[in-house]
Amino acid sequence: MTGPETAPRSDYLDGRDIADLTAWRRELHRHPELSGEEVATAARIVEMLTASAPDRVLAGLGGHGVAAVFEGPAEGPAILLRCDIDALPIEELGDRPHRSTVPGKAHLCGHDGHTAILAGVARWLARNRPERGRAILLFQPAEEDGSGAAKVIADPRFREITPDFALALHNMPGVPLGAAVLDEGIMNCASRGMRVVLSGRTAHASQPETGLSPVPAMSRLMQALTDLGQGGSQADPGFSLVTVTHARIGEPAFGIAPGRAELWVTLRTQRDTAMDALVAAAETEVADVAGRSGLQAEITWHDVFRHCENEPDATRLLAAALDAEGIRTQKGDLPMRASEDFGRYGDQTKAAMMLLGAGEQSPALHNPDYDFPDPIIETGARIFIRCLRYHLF
Image (cartoon, rainbow, N blue to C red; front, side, top):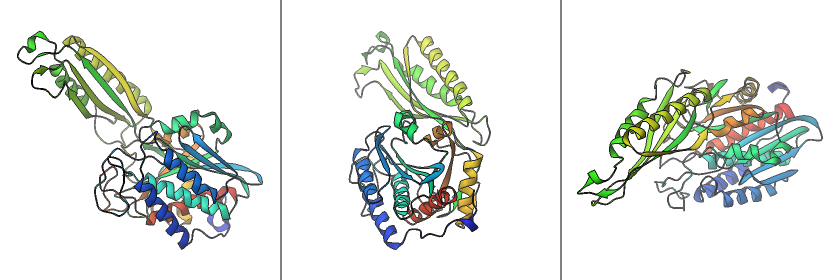
């Protein structure tokens, strides 16, 4: 690896670039698409890439993913930079001019900003073609439901671009604007969604004893599953958390005693191995409660996130870039409880993710008034560009 003193001199993005990228980010913000629905977003990305003239563009990767490949003339490593492009099923609040135009959907996790950062790297690569190796810009779909990375990796075309390093960033409210959080080891906890359906038998509300209501079992199960979490600090390998996120019993009617109940719960652990044990315990609890109540139980699993772990060499690459750019870096309160599907790339290559500060007074991610701070588009692009300089120039 070359150091900052030997990195080639080259312009970064200029004022016109930043203005264009900011406007483009806000256009993405106006037109959010949920996980698996990113058709128009992908089309905007492909259109944007046309001006940068990558050597290859792989569209429809793992669904609606897009990968742009910039080839150097000499042999060298392949560096993949990844962003996520999907939005959330949350109604946006606020009166900003670029607020979401789609009811009930909004970019409230900052993926529009991540996408703009990678668009900035594409602009820079159009003027600074790699001297060796490959730069791969991956615009990944469906991060929010945990399915995107797995589908991208399962796509046969991913084997054509399997990198030597995979790098990513995520904006983070509560961290000073433009500062960074980075460390080796576990970056994000594992999580998965558990959907439980309890089936009994309806009855007239005046004669509930003639049916089989799931209400008592539902009440016990909500508490029993919650109690499976050990709590504590996520820095503790034994950390676990079970959160009830949704519950429904029967139909909204006064004359019917319910015969069906549905419970949604999120399980969270520091590592994948601990998740396996927590899943087994949760399934046993459901079977026990349902069995003692004479109910039928069905369990399905959703939004499965592996833990995300920063590999040492990839972490050092990001750290060197941050140091060269003079960006304040801290270890922060890691791992994050929140999950991230970037961890799956660690099965394929050396991978690391960092957090980029969105401001200490910023609303939290997934809050209805959150908006990605435009000033860190340039900061994120500078970090990624510096990573490319170290290996490809």
